Length: 153
Image 1 (cartoon, rainbow, N blue to C red):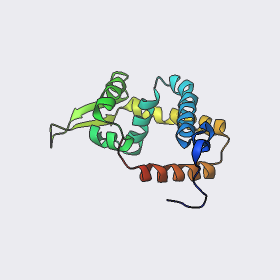
Image 2 (cartoon, rainbow, N blue to C red; image 1 turned 90 degrees about the vertical axis):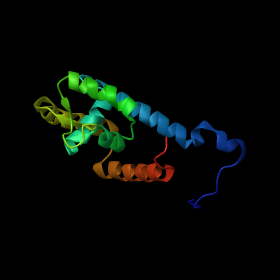
Image 3 (cartoon, rainbow, N blue to C red; image 1 turned 180 degrees about the horizontal axis):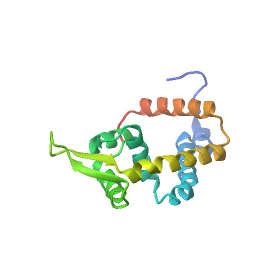
Image 4 (cartoon, helix red, strand yellow; image 1 turned 90 degrees about the horizontal axis):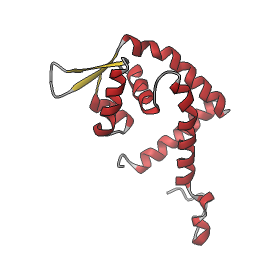
């Protein structure tokens, strides 16, 4: 535990302004809301966008690989993948080496969408009014928090 400052106690600790969980919740909600109109223009939802980002980084992953990367279970991920497939952005195929595994690959349309998605990120960065360095610093702190809290839940 970081002991730089004393821990709040009593009712002061229960003030909403002292709740990290609420600040993270509110920031997450507003961030997703910021993306929504930009992604609607591309015909995507936020979860679909995240799946595509993973595939743009490394195409041809299994459903399990994508789930691990996004910290989503297959029950949550499968409907997202089905909608992406119906939209023509990905294809789902069984792996020859192990037919139990389903591989997700980008289609030509899915690859082409990446160029348009670059503008989505630019627009969000402009809205945030943060430098790339500030974004990287915030990401590093959030990554540390995620690691500290572990992979459960």
